[in-house]
Length: 515
Figure 1 (cartoon, rainbow, N blue to C red):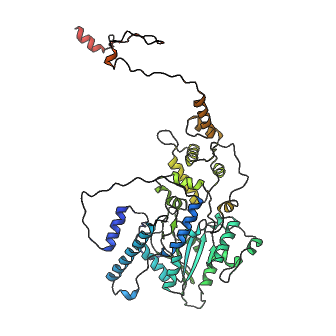
Figure 2: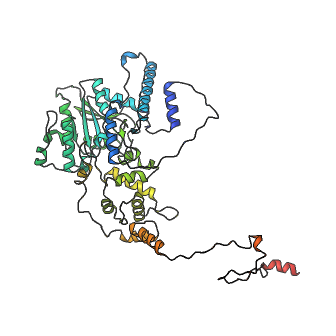
Figure 3: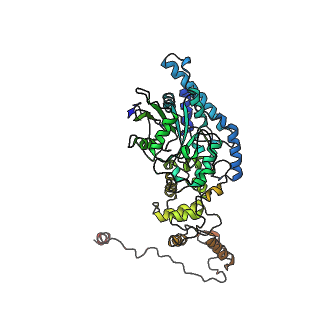
């Protein structure tokens, strides 16, 4: 393994307004002075609203209208610069224009962009990988491939050299069922996307011959030969095949560049192809921080690029947490992502996975789910109540790791039909967690429809007696003259004034006073 860059580069995907302003000013090379006594009122964050199906449909239509503007920065042509200073100046100008275009796109109503990479050094690493690679492999998560795929990256590779090959490697395909694999395979073949399914950890589920016959084949990809790759030997031979490896002695090895989002499995794929741990792997996004190469044999060389968060459309930050784009430890508002997850996953599936029981309710809330999970797992705060924020991070990490599965359908496929092949239909109520549910209801931490109905009935049918609230005469001087009067129906109480006559005192004081 060769380290191509000794300098570690930090990824910058999310900036505050002040940090973004300073970085753009640095790229522009401008100087500015602070203006004093200029202020404005910043409103608090708005409450989280789960988008409806109509909102999703409208958002998808807007994304199709503006997807041509989702660009990645280009490296200036070598004909425009003669030295390093001119190259740096041109790169900064290109970055500034690119960020300005994305900022203008973000200002449109209804469009939300993912946090994209803002560090120019990270994009320079991508340029180096593209320039040196014969095949650029874009690795995506199989649970939501279109969110992690950048169409403009394929276009940029062809701009650099039309002879370069592009490949979409759909990793973590072991988390999908056979029906999901066939639907996504049908979508890729119909849209002429050169894609293969792969798992860097486990083998793919076996695909029946009947299912293979139901998917149309193309000249670029066939079901039996290319779409489903199960072993490292098959993937190595496939890469050598599309790279036109020459067996002649002294021939140049094929260079394959691995590009993709953080935490999609680039380093895990390289380690599996190399047959050992060649690059570091972590569950935290952004473990790879520099460009490095790994030689598989004399005919194949792999380049591991740092994880790049490319600009893409999404429905909000909640979607980013569920897909692992943003780390769960950076989550500030924990009810929004869980509420979005509950709109996609049946409640009975949560009860089965976490051995909890939610109260009977027409629409279970994220608060009830997080409270039950926190109480069951022992996530308690210092005040003795369930820690919902810790439970939310626990659930989000299960989603990212694949222990709690959710798979996005291809365009044109209904989500409920897609979920019917993922979650069992015979999921019913289980007695597991009934004791914990009763304890939570007694403490008043959970309230289902039954408890709320009982409270309403008790308040509605309870016998109440009217009572007049009279101010004490001690605080009202006007009532002191009527002190001897007695209100009908009440008994006059004696005035209890002790005046501390027999107050206990320390013996040393009594002893000193008597002598």
